[in-house]
Image (cartoon, rainbow, N blue to C red; front, side, top):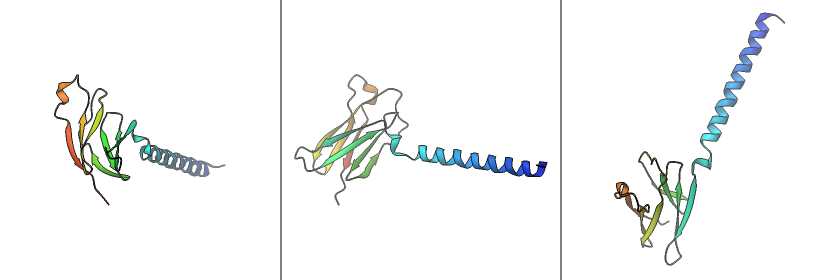
Length: 117
């Protein structure tokens, strides 16, 4: 083999490795594994339910009828915090932090209207 064909093989190999690494990074980054935990909350009548999915820095996303209806836009939390849901009606909930020992997050409460289809 001459040096020209070795160079082509080396270039093709490097390009192939870069493509494989890119695809693997994309698949891992876009998978549904972005949530650390999820909890289902049913309405008092049992007719509706919301799912609160929390990522690794305790940022909640709220889903109703498989649609994300609320996404926490903050930077997250340095410690583990727990979110809870209070049903105000069949069409509205209050999402709040239920970590009672930490008053610095007392303002973390959100009124969320459920979208009905």
